[in-house]
Image (cartoon, rainbow, N blue to C red):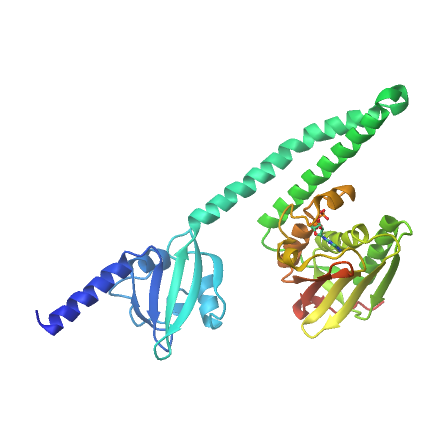
Amino acid sequence: MTRARRLAITLSDLRNAADSLPDAVVLLDEAWRVRWFNRAAEALLGLRRGHDRGVVLSDHLHGSELAAWLRAGARVPLHDIPAPGRPGDHLDVSIQPFGRRQRMLLARDISPLTRLEQIRRDFVANVSHELRTPLTVIHGYLELIDPEDVPALASVLGEMRAQSKRMGQIVEDLLTLSRLETQEHVIDERVLMAALLATLRKEAEALSQGRHRITLEVTADCDLLGSPRDLHSALSNLVSNAVRYTPSGGSITIRWQRTPEGAMYAVSDTGYGIPANHLTRLTERFYRVSSSRSRETGGTGLGLSIVKHVLNLHQARLSVESTPGQGSTFACHFGAERLLAPENP
Ligand code: ADP
């Protein structure tokens, strides 16, 4: 067999192998023009053999999320976007540079995963919704019974009331999470920070009942753009955690200040703190460092998941710093695009 023939066979084998891949592969030149693509790229990206070689990929995908990402330089991998070639399907897309200023676009069909994720979300939302009515009925009847009429059961009754209230709170938190998960955007309203911070401080004082020293330090005079209800819920969750995980006599500081990227809302406490190995998992549902402490203080284990979702919807992020035995700081970092100059009085 001649060398040329052997090379031709190897090339054809490589093409066949690439065509059998379930993921789309597109080779792009230095000007982002399509040099070559495999069969999956035809199905997932709508590229056509014999037609689309040499076209600028973002022109071909014009109007899609993928095109906008390519035009912006495709710097970070793209997660869960609609497949331009197959409506209803979802892709993860990344770019790998290779050779001399060439690039390889990889697109993976993640539709089976997103469908499973949807089933899970619907299941949690449905279960929570179905539990709501029976719980309300049980709670209502428990409230009707006067412990003085049944002194022998007074302590049992108290425990039943507390537990049914707790279950009600878990169900409400799960429904909030379901709503936040399915929501893609928040309403953009002015969130009056001065008023919100004053409310948060009052909430902290009410929860603490004089057991902690509570300080408010405000150096930024800007408002936020977003959902007042969701932001209140997220920011107050951090305050409530600080109170609940700080022993009597400790201090809690609520801050609102400017940062190079925008502004930061932070709650610092001098409480129990969190060992470093737990920090990355705190925003998972029902993740607790100490279940008994969380239960004792009335926690549902869902607070920080709610915080994370609310912040994601506002393109903001949560950071946590903590030293066991010394305290923690939970901070929400907002970008400049979410800030508004205060309104004139
Ligand atoms: P929970 O309802 O249990 O408080 P969260 O989602 O709000 O649930 O918090 C998750 C866990 O993170 C808590 O159970 C607790 O162990 C830990 N945690 C949260 N905030 C603090 C804090 N300020 N200090 C110490 N631990 C905290």
